[in-house]
Structure formats: C-alpha cells, structure tokens
Image (cartoon, rainbow, N blue to C red; front, side):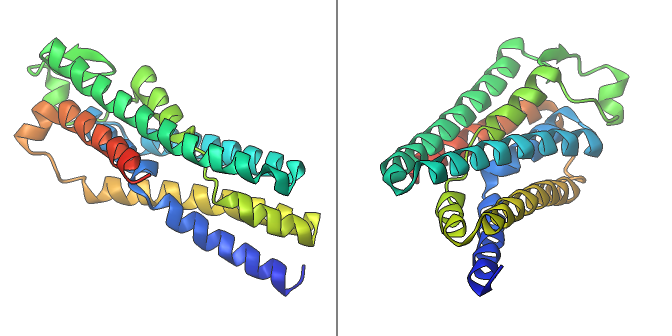
Length: 222
C-alpha cells in the first residue's frame, strides 16, 4: 500500500475516533448502567454488541455504495440524512419510554419492572445483570446508526486497491469498537461514586430524560 493508502487509513482512524466520542455512542450505556446497577462486564458486553452492529451497518452501506459507484452520491446524502434522523428519534423514543415506564409504575424500576425500595439488594448497591428488554433494546438503538463518514474514505481507498479498502474497513472497525468500549468504561469509572439518594430513587427517570435529550440534540444539529 502506497503513501496515499497510509494517509487514508490514518484519516479513517482519526475520523472513527472523533465520531465515536459523540455522546450518543456511549452516554446512554453509562446512564442506564448507573440507573439499573449493571456490572461493568455486563455494560461492556452490551456496548460491544452495539458497536459490532454499528460497524456492520456502516461497513455494509459503505461497501454497497462503493460497488454502486460515484453515481450513488445522491443515495449517500439520503442515507446520511435518514440515518441521523432515525438515530435521533430512536433515542428520543427509547428515553421517553424508559422514563415514562418508571413514572407510571411509581417505583424504582429495574429490568422494566418495579423494584421496591425496601428490598435489601437495592439498598446494598449490589450489581444487577442487564435487563433483556432495556439492555438489548438500547444496544440496538445505539448500534443501528450508520456512520456515513466512512463512505468517502472507502471510495478513495477502493480507487487505490482492494487491499487499501480492506485496510480502511479494518481500521474503522477496530478504532470504533476500541473507542466506544473505552469511553464507556471511562464513563462508568467516572460515575462510580455518584450514589446520591435522589439518583438512587429517580435514576431511571433522569437517565431516560437525558437519553431523550441526547436524541433531540442530534435532531436539532442535523
């Protein structure tokens, strides 16, 4: 691979890292993990699954558009606009549903069910496994959001060689996964001591509201 190929790969790494630092890639996992007292391993597992979906969707679109050729530029614009809108609306809907479920049940919710405050496990701060519904739904909502920034990089790489295209795809996947998991882990570490009574009681409602606001911010900044 020549100098142009190395330049494109380096640009891909930087682009993927900066793009993944956007809060919608990791903040929802930190918020829900804190609210539902998930363990670090469980949270990282869900983040990894979401990252794999995010990479798979992004790479599939990039490769498809590369094979379609430059005539697919209009399709790229549509995918970019639709992807951002879909991601924003999914986060808004998930956050509102998560918050409203808690408020309607009137209790401390774990795994989409009411958890009484007087139960010893809740007071002890014991780690809980991820809720199937909330955890895996969140992984899908966050992951099903293609990064179209990799498409022009894939186009440029394909013009050099198939090896360069493979290098770009690999660099994008590894950088995105590493950054997404790493920042989530740092977020969990940074909020580990936030155990205020208000958050312990209303953590689900607060988390849902913040996730919805993250989605709304994506929609506003489109």
